[in-house]
Image 1: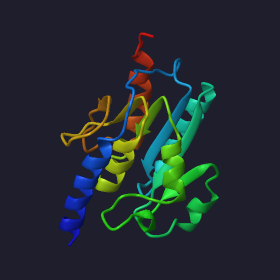
Image 2 (image 1 turned 90 degrees about the vertical axis):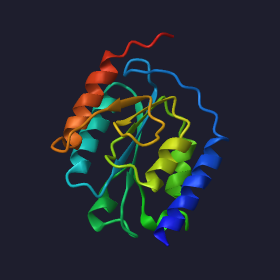
Image 3 (image 1 turned 180 degrees about the vertical axis):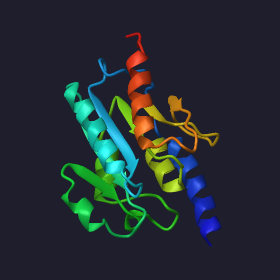
Length: 179
């Protein structure tokens, strides 16, 4: 049954993506006015890395929103105290794995210059968020799968989310967008 749900979800995503108009524009930390962070909240130590990355972004005077994906039906108790973070849970998924609900509506209402996806794998529920986002510049880890990233960072199995954060800072800083 899970295979059927996922196949239908992939078809629905492809159909919905056709209706998305996205203006691709390269941004660095000097030209961006807003950033959205997407991360797997179930990953160990992800909060500390995301918190530091968010502090780095906000230190540059850039508006920043962070959305965590929790691979459970409920938000774990310790995450309820994370101020200014929104969470999407398994309970927010419809039958073909498309995220819905208040946090998802907030995610789609953002129109960021940069979207940074810290998830390592691309489950269908994350693909919905990434591919239907109107972010002008999308950054994520390298994958052979079809994706919507404008910049991908290649990681090996022994690299963690902290390494990804440092690489994203490094490469986005190097970009010199032409206006």
